[in-house]
Length: 102
Image 1 (cartoon, rainbow, N blue to C red):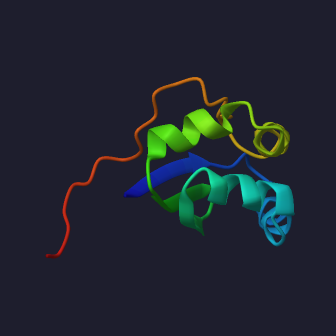
Image 2 (image 1 turned 45 degrees about the vertical axis):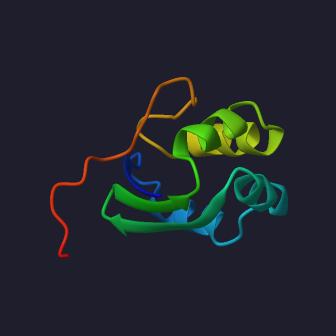
């Protein structure tokens, strides 16, 4: 399945966010793949971040990663950079698809 997400950076954190994402920790890469993620892309427009996640089961991925040590550490780091942190406690389903060219 494909899931689109939108997050927002804190002002002034753009370059740091990109620097941190230049190399994803190997243990996070492994955790994401074990949770069913086959691809995760992020685009930035100013402070707005747009993610496209390809994953077998998005809700299952979030459950698997919620307490995973690699993700907990990563989310703590992201909380320093994002306007709203994601603690994986909600029932996020991503953005609703409005239109697609068939």
